[in-house]
Length: 414
Image (cartoon, rainbow, N blue to C red):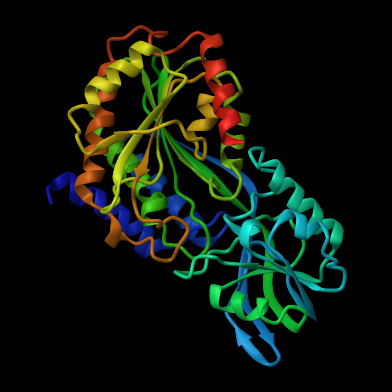
């Protein structure tokens, strides 16, 4: 590995191995924030901690038994504690759920209802179907809820919502099979968990004030259970490397590096950034977000939103020097949306064609290729050089153009 690759991997190992899983409000989350701030300071950036409240949650123990037989289960993130026994009642579709009596029972949802984690109640991009599922579950008042993991390779908690107050746990595929073969059997679910008030913080590093600014960002928090090397230690490692790499560069605009918190459990880090910065982002020349890159068995991807045709064509031309990079359709699930939906020309780096690592214990450094991380550092540096001699409005598209584009994006995302 060359020097840049060594630096990248050192940052990545610190975040994902030494610090490890870092969900919002946790001690590890606070440690990661301090670490990022120190790197920004060492690079000569003025550092701001945008501290805001968020809950912290821990699971001490979860047990699930059926007829005295233990079954594999993990409390869903932010589940309240419980110790309940009751007959199970199962549903796999919305229609089945509508017709199932859950009062005084432990609900089991699987199949079509558990294809993906259930979006939080306050997530503005949740589908009408998810909204209906949540309302039905709350109206039917089960003693507790069990969500069945459909993938036999690991256990991913399928509910993650501090506003959802029904005790719940995700069970493994094998445990789900046992439960569904004995629909109506009595089970006991015991969750020993605790939710407390805590804080987290966006860490913002800024170069000297200049005319306009370019925002470089990546989120540093993780879900529970995962060391988050790919999602998103990779993006933060690139952000920290750029801080060091660009400190001697002379740009006519300000560089603003933002390590966002709480991207994984509602984008309240973005909300705090806007609360402090204001909704008017007209002085931002462009935003570049890195979220999940460098996977050994995947390809780095790039997309652009709300950018002028000239800017997009120029970046497309530069990207041709990186044959391992794939252009993809815009995707909304990360921090770049906060900027793109307000008319800021936005670039998002991610991965296409890779292994499903995100949100899982297997998301370790072993899956990351330092040469792929380095290529993103080089490409972002080239984009910044491109912007050096451009006029302030060159990167932006007329409001009516980006509004039409974003309306289509909203429709496809919903």
